[in-house]
Length: 88
Image (cartoon, rainbow, N blue to C red; front, side):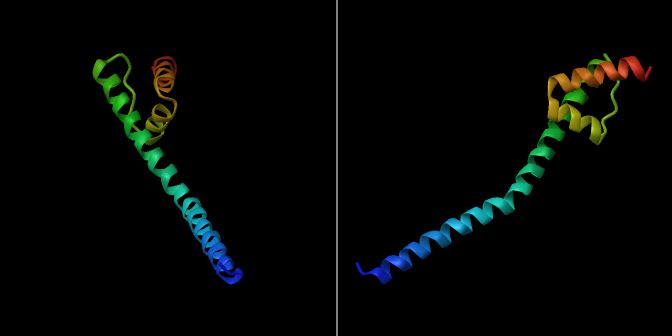
């Protein structure tokens, strides 16, 4: 192996690594957006179940779904307490 061939191989490896890093950086916002959407849908389902049980009526809005999806069960409990105490 001569030095020129080794330089080309090293350049190719560096190029591939840079392409992978750039692709990962560019896809990160889409991954976060997808996760936000999925969590909001799960939050809407949780709020729908709470409304079907009839303990507290919580409007299914994007903000409520976001809170329920992001914080999970504690978020739903927090929304229930908020709706029960301050919206009656």
